[in-house]
Amino acid sequence: MSNKWSWPTPEPGIYFNLPFPEYLAIPALSSSGIKELCISETDFWARSWMNPDREDEDTQAKLEGRLYHKRILEGREAFYAEYAPDFEDDGSPDILRGNAEMREALTAIGLTGLSTKNADALAALCAEKLPHKKTLISLQNEYRAMFHGKQFINPRLIRHIEFAAKMVEYHPDTRSYFVGGYPEVTVIFDAFGVRFKTRFDYLKVWEAADLK
Image (cartoon, rainbow, N blue to C red):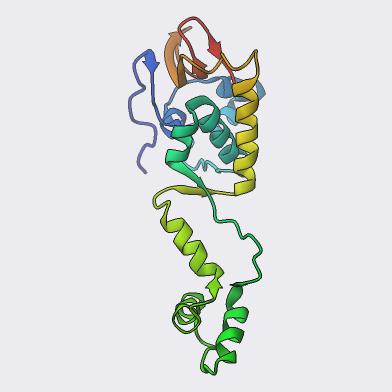
């Protein structure tokens, strides 16, 4: 079995623009590790890089945390360079939704042999035979093609994130905390004979801020 934690620990210093997965993989003690050690050595080992069978579950809460951090700490431009709101159905009555509705519309103009056709094939037939009709799948594909390479996020979540960002950006006290500095800064340091790692949400020359 290969040793998953055989790579060297980064030298002490300040690291900018280090991807979060790379930070997590650094074999050094963090605040989370200290909390686990306070429970037991086994708890720490089980959740650390030393456990070859450790599985890092990417939960919805972790995803949302990364999204809020990206938008508030790195700004609107950086956020939308990586993410986009997913297609949102406006409920228009002129759209054919689902295979059943597409088959029904195609059958109404005399087409047969539709039972074995999948959604893409049905949408292509609708585009050819019913050009005055729109299908939900074609609208989704056209929309997503405009944002190729980006990760799609539920539009409702995007709205919540934007609301939170505006609360920070326009509040007279907090709006100055996350400008003029550096987001997601990793610091590696040695103390008590141990190598530590920590990650500041936002670091300024004279202060650090934490987003909670």
